[in-house]
Length: 205
Image (cartoon, rainbow, N blue to C red; front, side, top):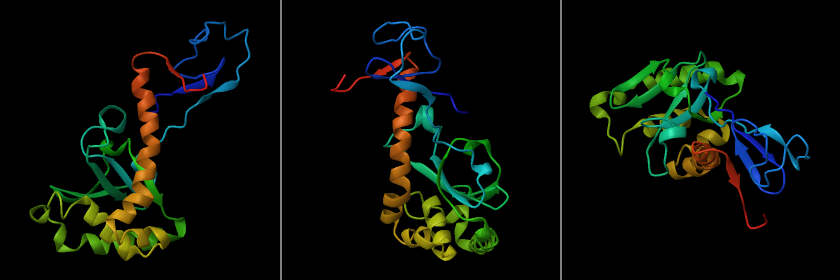
């Protein structure tokens, strides 16, 4: 799902594109004849396929995907994966454990070390057996996906991850905001490229 954004610098501004042009979009000179001040490189794709990251905490937009639909004002949906890559999530449908393509473009918040996998699954199973995760008890603002994940993480006892999970605010500040802020820059460039090559100019060029 990586669209393959390329970045390079030729005569001053950074230039983003999906395929290298023959001429520099800024100075119009032939790129084959001129030196790059920053060689072309592929911008790292910030999103992952949840099923490929076992024993992990992941987030995605509640509706749509990050690249095309996400805005800061939109809600995010959080879930965890098992040691075999199944997604466990709690929403208005209740608690579900499955493999879904809806989690093919998400952000990885944290993944535990391999030695923790058995403990991760055991704690997750105990939390899932609690009767409070039924569809009838789901509340969009007070008893939701975030409640489920934080409850699990606190019981997991995994270093700073579990410590941050004791507070919604702390968890957001430490694990969610840094990832979404970084991804936001990629999203912004991607959307600009829908209209053609993007020349990023600043006060110095």
